[in-house]
Image 1 (cartoon, rainbow, N blue to C red):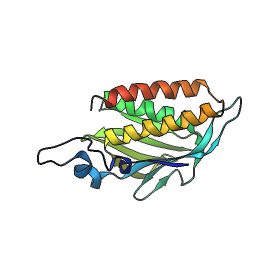
Image 2: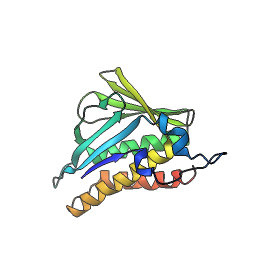
Image 3: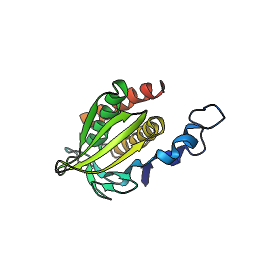
Image 4: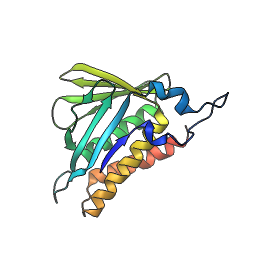
Length: 178
């Protein structure tokens, strides 16, 4: 199972309407240049260790840290949920989301109503991307829940899964305000 968090999943849903009948998808699709790729099929769980699966950020120019990147997926998604929630609640902050393996991170902020992503490796900017908050967050929530369901089906759960689940509940409440 290959999951991709993107505006594409919302292609048939009108997210928000603007004067003249255009939707958020129609007005902002050209600005959508970042999405998270998550490979649940690669999920590995150990009785006393973190869940591992593929997770990386894709922009029009970069797969970051790399296409097929494998990491502590529940931990990293928990950080994504917390960072996006923090930026949604205070749009003047920039939050750094690290990857567990290697000197890689993504800075997330909200500028001009868009989620802005800056990819950092070894303290050097690698690339940038942006996304419409509502669809990006809704898709992140959906894909994270799919991952947590896969963890449960393999009889794996941890404090990190509780943290992610709690963050998803907070994001769900926050996205309802958009």
